[in-house]
View 1 (tube, rainbow, N blue to C red):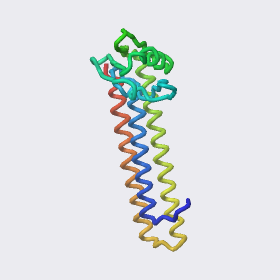
View 2: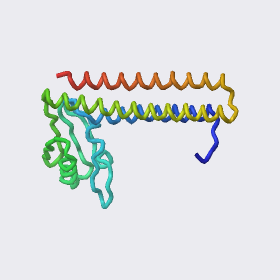
View 3: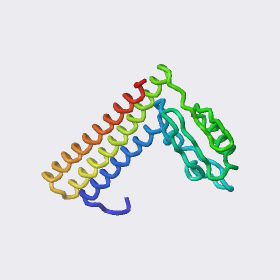
View 4: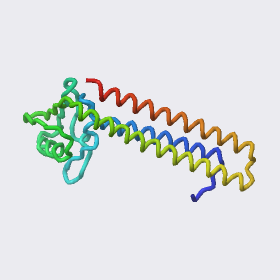
Length: 189
């Protein structure tokens, strides 16, 4: 690192990292289909627009018609085939229907086998978040140990280590809650 941090500053950086890990997990879980229409399912789709590749939401309005239908209304009607092609190319398992005005995407109901695959996928995302949290924990604890060798008081270091453990435990519990909620959402027919 190019800057010398105090233990407090380093732990605050660690907390920020943990919060980002949770935010990343939330975004990844939004992308996992639950059989319900949600604009987040199309978040990663990018389209070619006047020579630049831009996110879909910058060239069209995304809305929910009903529980299983997403409606995409481009601001420029010439974008309809481009958007349709980008959705097909994204290989999300959706079949876009272009009526000349808007594109409708009907979200098919999930089979039991597909639900189990999605639960596995959600658990994998949770495991990646847990790995990020463990890595941050190791970095924070290593930093504290290094500072003790450089003269940081041991009793204060022990309190800081406990603070790190409590912080990590809180974030790990948050991951568990998010994964459980997503599993329940996926398995609800």
